[in-house]
Amino acid sequence: MLIFLQSTLRKLNFILDNLGSNSEKLDEIFDGFKATPVLLNKTLRNANGKLDSLTYSFKTVASNLNRTLDKLQPTLANFKTISDSLKSVELNKTLTKAQQALTKLNITLDKMSKGDNTMSKLMTEDTLYVNLNKLLVSLDSLSKHFNQNPKHFMAPLGKSRKKIEKDLESQKKEKKK
View 1 (tube, rainbow, N blue to C red):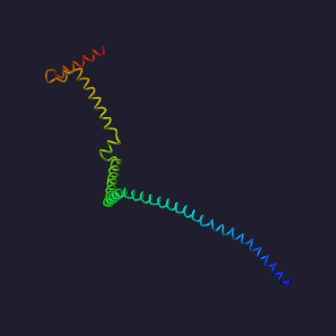
View 2: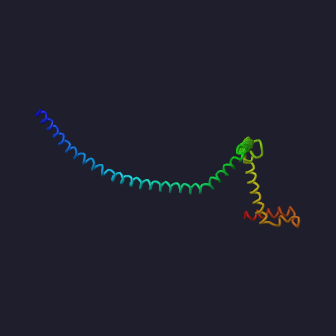
């Protein structure tokens, strides 16, 4: 039995030695637990500070958004007015009238391009242009003659046609010399 007692005492010593080393480990664990509330408090304070900052930022953004919305109210009201007036404009009728006007313009242009009316003739033929040029040349010649021989135009007041013709003949002879 002695051996049994010795064996039990040895095991008890071994257990007590292990308990001693385990108690050191437990002391370290408990020391760590002592530091945990301090770390937890620091973390909570840091989180509270960030939460306060976030709350302040959110309040600022909400305040700015409210001011912006207050400023936008008149603009939105104006937009509503413009929208209502656009609804009241009879756009389809206006487009229909514009289409009708374009159709009439096309018909008129077609008639002008066919050449069977005065306007198309004025646009396509040069007869009027030629006749106007001839008229201008004649008017120029008449004005020159009037400037050179004003007496010829006063025939009812004293000169007859025969005298005018004699004067013209004598002027032509003088020019030839």
